[in-house]
Amino acid sequence: MAGFLDRLAAAVAGKAVPVPMPAWVQPSVPDVEEIIAAKERDASSSYAGFIRYTDADGVMTARRIVCRSITGYGRPETVTAWCCERKAMRSFKIERISELVCLETGEVLDPAGHFDQLWMHGALKVADKALNDFGRVLAFMARCDGSVHPLEADSIEHSLERYIVRFGGDDRMLGSALANIGKIAPDGDDLVISLGRLVRHAEARKLARLLLDCVGEVTAADGRYAPSEIEWAEVVTEGLKETAR
Image (spheres, rainbow, N blue to C red):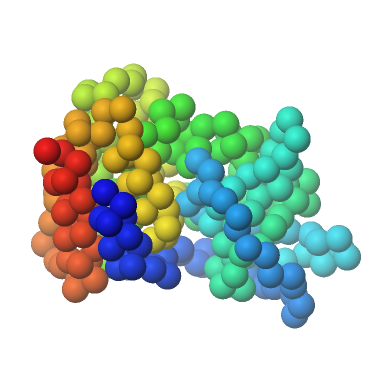
């Protein structure tokens, strides 16, 4: 199985799905900024949002970020994220984030409360960690060609419903997953990490069978196949077939 994940990692290396630019704002970043490395990713990884941030010198900036991890002592204090404007990892103190906006809906969110939910329940805000990973895989496959077609979105919704029926959950869990699946922007590393966890799951064979079917449906939903999309789908399905046997 390690061979499959290594092949997938090579195929999607450096790949990040696009994060939309809000039409109502002009992002800005300072001339000099420290570059950091993301040492690890947690369940919040792939959540994308727009923030206004004030640094220690009082300089306010506006930028799109994609979470990698949230850390703190007893409560979320710092977000490590990919900055789309800097094209590098950055660290943000949550108390200095004055505004957080959903890139999908334009809704203004409470930064402290929202990052607390992401810290506790992950990018899809559900307690089921496998569902978080299942959703990341499908979101990557749908968005990796540059956009999510309405038919792909319908296919993802159907896939999440099938997961709930097969592995348990309720309407509240399904509703949260559906409400948040469009707000994530998983990259190639998210895809590899999520698949790695799923194929080591206690019910890996059943998960692989369902995900294999769902990946095929999502990829085919819009009737278009980008060359890279075909390459990644082939590696993903190859590994899932091995697990599903």
